[in-house]
Length: 124
Length: 423
Image (cartoon, rainbow over all chains, first blue to last red; front, side, top):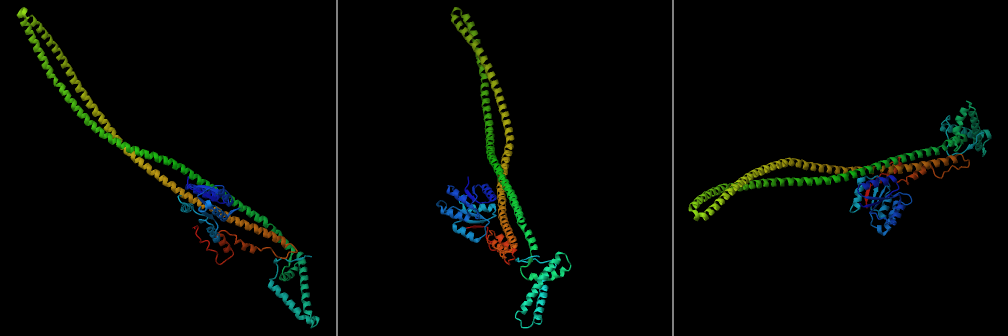
């Protein structure tokens, strides 16, 4: 099986469409509905190769999630991409400061997403 | 008797003079009274002019009430009075008959359910679109699964095709080897045939020897007969010689018999050898001919099989390429359906704004008919609208807001930011 990607988004259709697109291209995909659920699963032992997260989510947003993930020693160098409708430059800069690897704005074409993933994920 | 209330805004009547005209008339009247007051009430009175103005205002108010009363009875005479007085009343802020205001408030009370209906409609749209998009995604995923199954079948066909190609290549080598061996065998057959012919000839060459042996046996027999005759002539002294002669005769007779037998067998063997040789050569040549025909038939079949295998591999590779292209197109489709999430967020924002407006109108309606209301709201509709700008997530929302409010230069810098940025 291919590299494991952890997809975090509160939109059911986003999760379905991105998951289907990634699996078509040979990736294994796990999902969470918000930052809180994602953090619990990571603390529970989940070891993805890449995290793709939305920014504006209930309970815990993407920026807060990135901060928590980077604080965990096992995930200090894990690639983290944001996939969001957010256009605020300040939030983008916050994501960068917190340790995000890239900032992607929805909607993003499937082949473009695959290209970016292959760039940030060695061996994919 | 109608009572006066003081709302923030007034409602203009249909049958009025323009306000500037009415205001001018009232000012003229007041000016006339002001000027005439010294003549009417005496000069140098400190309160003379003020009293005149107050009296004028009281007269105006009384006239207005009278006019309204006439109007309520549909009296034509009320019209000029109302036409003059109502705009005058409008100049004093906050004077409006409560019946009209109550009608407005009653109408505005329906704003909340109106907005609620619109929000429900939007909810329906979001649900329907989400359902449709999920259907599209499900179908795209199913297409991918079917294509993967197809690819698996194709991979197995590729393996079989390659095996077939290898088999036809081996067959070609076998046919070539067979041809080579056939030629060798034919040469061997011819060589063996020649050798057998030689042996047959050698056997045949024994015939004269057998004839010679028979002749020698005949001569020996003749000699034994002569010996017998001489033995008889010799009498008793020739008795032993007679016995010897008899033995020799017997021996010659046996020799003759054996020679005849040998001759017969040699002839038979020679004939059989000739027959067998001929048959072997004939059979061998026939078998060679048949094999050659078979090889001739196999060669074009083998070539067709090779061509077919190559064509099959080409087709399979083309299908594989088509599958990869389909994956790319499906990826594009799945990227495009992300519009639904963008649309949902924008509709969420519109719904929130509509709910806010409904609550604002509800508060306004309640306040407007409150006699103690000071005319102030927690936040005006305009300030609420301005506050939305800080809640927008997308550049397109900000741009639409600025355009709607008539800003000269809508925000464009954030919209120009690239969709993909790697840090």
